[in-house]
Image (cartoon, rainbow, N blue to C red):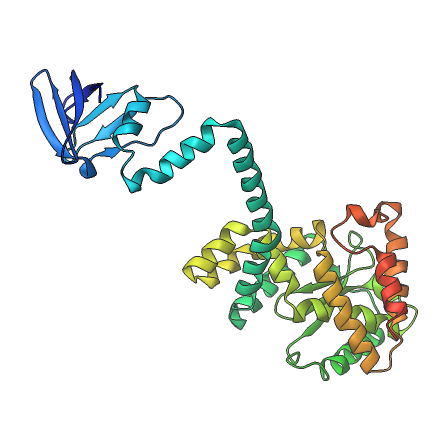
Amino acid sequence: MTPLRALYYDGKTSQQREVLIRIEPPGRLHVSGDGIDFSCPLAHVQPSPRVGNTRRHLQFPDGSQCETEDNDAVDGIFAGLTSEAPGRLIHLWESRLGYALLALALTAAALWAGITYGIPALAKQVAFSLPASTEKAIGRNALAGLDRILLSPSELSPGREEKLRALFSKMMSDVEGAADYQLELRASKALGANALALPSGVVVVTDKLVELAKDDAELIAVLAHEIGHLRHRHTLRRLLQDSATVLLMAAVTGDLTSVVSLASALPAILVQAKYSRDFETEADDFALEYMKRHGVAPESLGAILLRMEEGRGAAADVPDYLSTHPATRERAERSRVAR
């Protein structure tokens, strides 16, 4: 094999010296040049990864190193080492357009799969691992944030509020594990006719939604839907999905209490983002099952959903294939045939 020309650095000074590098049996690398003459087992030499045709470095155990532009010669010297196989494979992919395009496609597919399936699955695991105290703190802080920026005290009459709380309490008595759930009534010009499910079992209902409902059956439908979000921890899971960095730290380190720091972001997430198609479907399924068990007409859910959409205007009428959440008309049809 033709000797490899390189520049030698002793690792102590900036002086460089020209040297020749040869392979000597059995499996040794010999370096000789201006005042330099030593050999080293090939397995103890660490070559830098090949990146295109940039210069390569050979690192020796004593801290010295050689630098060369002859990448092919370096590859030939270390071809027999299995430890360098990954580097050779990466260079092969980088140097051939077809392989590079395939690698790009695989990277894009892996990224898509991670965002579509990996992060939601991890968020679900973390959400259901949170201690009750942490979840309560998130819900309490989120409600306080909403009260500061979007909500104001309810303007419903005391009698109407009392009836609504009695209705909610009766519903909770028949839902397992919902003894601590609470109803919060608020006025909000920004939210209009709306309802929100906060972590820790808080359901916020606006005055305009109460006014929009034609009867208690429609209010039960909305409340049951929000309870469905609570049962599946959708709000918490969405918060975690939208904060992937904190999610990964919580999952890897087990420091679940750090999730409380996300509570300040929850009001914005609740207002600006919508639940996913799967989340809305799960919540609808819970509501429809509850309504059927208690003799409440399932189509009441679709009726109030359609009326809520009409109140939001034409902007809410987005083609279903462009949306990640089910179209309101599709959800209304499901409630109609759910009998």
